[in-house]
Length: 83
Image 1: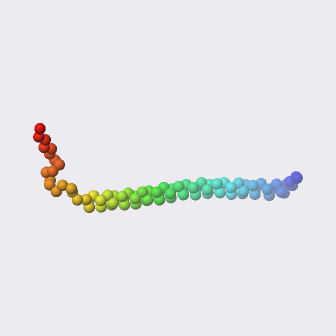
Image 2 (image 1 turned 120 degrees about the vertical axis):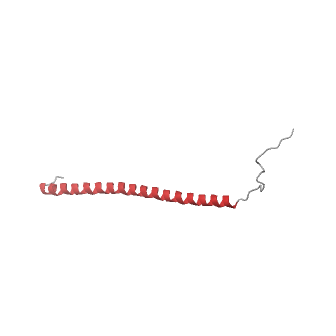
């Protein structure tokens, strides 16, 4: 199968167009992947902040609802030992 000179003139520009198109598609995939990665990291940060806030509020609620066991302020501070 031989190519005529006219066919060659048409083939080379189309090959250049195709190579540019393929290059653009590869770059597009890389850009989309990096965007997805940054969005995922941002969502993870937001979720961690939300979880931290709920954990802190639960800890504060637990600490504020506790009642002291010893009502006597002097209990538990000194040890009396008799031998």
